Image 1 (cartoon, rainbow, N blue to C red):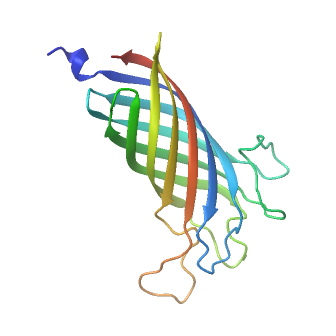
Image 2 (tube, rainbow, N blue to C red):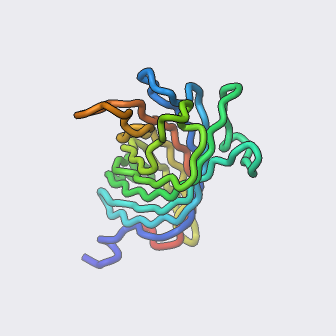
Length: 192
């Protein structure tokens, strides 16, 4: 068996994501409407004939009204709602490969270094660190220089949006984000 058969599809490249978010409210002061953000980053993968993994490092951008906002992917879809943040996010996904189809799961972890509007109560601060469980599918097509693909995922928030309220001890189940993620990526590398 040749090494190229073991590493049947591997490469590095760029990706762009549009993500549509909503909060599970649970009576907390969080945004009540949908809002979207965008992410751009680098992406690496290594798939062989039956399965594989991929990793990405992203810069997430949701501009405030006075900042640059990309059409449709930097929007608040409820009147009067204003959310804005910037974050760095890393993701690791894995799963089977069947021809051009890649069902996958994994973990995405991020750090919001600027944020506004994720709490509607000034006394409640949003979490800076967050995590998601992605469940998705990629369609990856070979091209002359590597591959290009599109992905769609439903991502389940694992961390609370807001920090624990004062005076609450023990386990605390707060509002979490959920999101629909759509991705386009281009990879340079080997494909078989």
